[in-house]
Amino acid sequence: MCEFKVYLGGEQVMRDVVYAEERGGSVLLRTVLGEERLVEGCRILQVDVEKEVLRLARSS
Image (cartoon, rainbow, N blue to C red):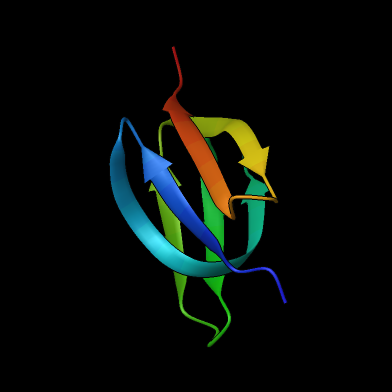
């Protein structure tokens, strides 16, 4: 299973993420263990499966 490290502005905000969904200016993240976090004021910028990295960017 592919588990992502999630970065926002160069800072790691979460790891072991298996689900990400944009929700009206926010991104919902969920880990393999079911832990959820809503990161507000951002969007998904890049998904790199090979490196298991998901990058977020602040919404303008």
